[in-house]
Length: 140
Image (cartoon, rainbow, N blue to C red; front, side, top):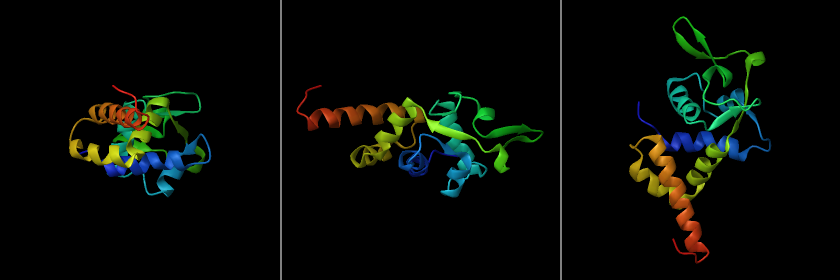
């Protein structure tokens, strides 16, 4: 499966648009980003692997603490409301989300959407910095 930059942007927008510091994994699903679907799991796992999300204990990189449980056949999302996990964007996740939220940056990143997510994040943040510097008349 390839990274769908539009999908990741939408998923991260759920965090940015929230009135709360934390959202629930159930809220992601309610907004159309089901972490139990193949597409949702693939993209949410990328956010986990990159350390873009944490739970209330500031744990990152661990699928079990961020909404999944291990079962005999692999991993599956925690399905009952009592197992719902509160998650937030880390500073790195927020930086990446902000880069994707910028229309100019996002349009440029779509040109390299087949690159690894780390490359997309790094280029996106650099583009965001560059555009901000130009806006304020600062040189690189």
